[in-house]
Image (cartoon, rainbow, N blue to C red; front, side, top):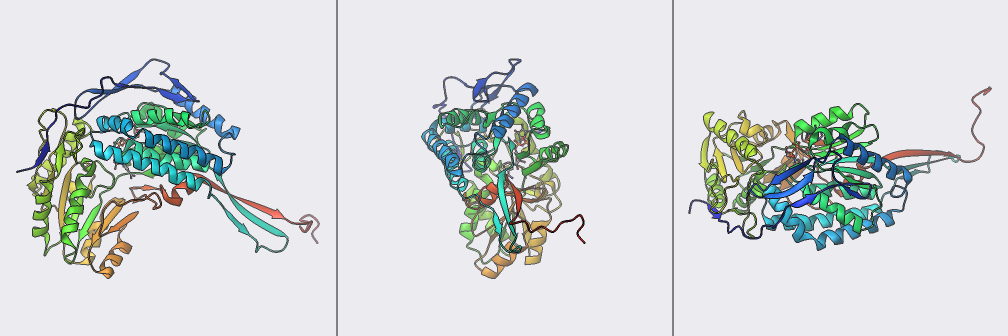
Length: 507
Ligand code: NAD
């Protein structure tokens, strides 16, 4: 058996596309000019959704609705308890709709149905966690400033937040941002990726049902231009939170600078797993395979490069290749499938281009390196691919491939491993495998990354904050820091008694 491929029987497809509309000020709307766009399933080639295509008019209306809702206090000035209760109702509704959401998410992204179900139900837990945080927001008091002064630092919602999300984890990433912004008391305008608009639109139904006041969350479907760009630059918006590519993140930062609004960015990664010879190599090999093929490698956290000690590199790579052949690629609607389709044909070409360029530069193909044919489907699939003999200067070692492609590099000393790890524009996450606590701690402290996993990969919890350094982004999501992003800090300075010495005629 060369590779494990799950064929398709083409069962389980919806009979009609999902129709998506904008959700503005509590009402469902088509675009003023009637424009729409379609999403074709990358796996099955069917139309999954037909959505209203927003323009400047819709973005403007959504921003104004969010501004008015914020300023009215209907959400921003109610108690944390009251906000938390709504968020908990949303969480219950998400949990009750897992299958419906997961089916559309699978068809729009190409990801496996089992994974999509886990992501939707996991997202419900993010809403629950944010609901708990809604009641814990607090500031500081300063009782040491002298007997006639009391200082209090309070936290306030930052205001209107633009939320712009990518296609790879549409509902999960939305849920890393939106419930936290809402817990803080902000109001929001949300734009999902044009590739995956539907589950975000479907959330609008649940927000309504949960009793969220009109205008608190507004959803505009459409493209980066003009919808996202308007949301990034608009003077009535106080903050933009964005997940996506580094190039667009930089454009958003530039657009936001006109009004100096706050910007939080979760961008790309080129995340290494470093394997020391004393590691539990069987666990490490399994985690490497998981790290590179999960979500077909279309993952900011993809463990797309491994840095293996020279003494074990050959045997370890052989084991990774052996395990790679056993990963089930194929029809995303089959519950046995572990890796589904690539998001678009253009993206498939980009992945293939990185592999070809690496081979042309002297790297070798240990496995894969071609489009994958799945019986019963003529969609976009790519083989599990392992590229060996990669050197740190090659594009495949430095840039985000965003596909099921592993680059294998080697090292000799801890200093080498750290140098290769940190020799990247990105700094999202990194991993270290060793049974020696000193090795693990030294690597963890010296690696430039927002998250360092040791003897595991991609374990995550709502409690643990997430984000990147360098060109992987700025700001943090989830955990208590995820709430702090959406809060502004204000100092209240209070004089007690008529003790202030006059400034005029002080002598
Ligand atoms: P993308 O940057 O192309 O698009 C992301 C979103 O930005 C989409 O909604 C898009 O419509 C919008 N957009 C595009 N141009 C815009 C503009 N000029 N102004 C405002 N909005 C605009 O990213 P993508 O291809 O959807 O997602 C893949 C990228 O996302 C990868 O680079 C990946 O690493 C990154 N990502 C990062 C994380 C993280 O947490 N660090 C998580 C997931 C994905």
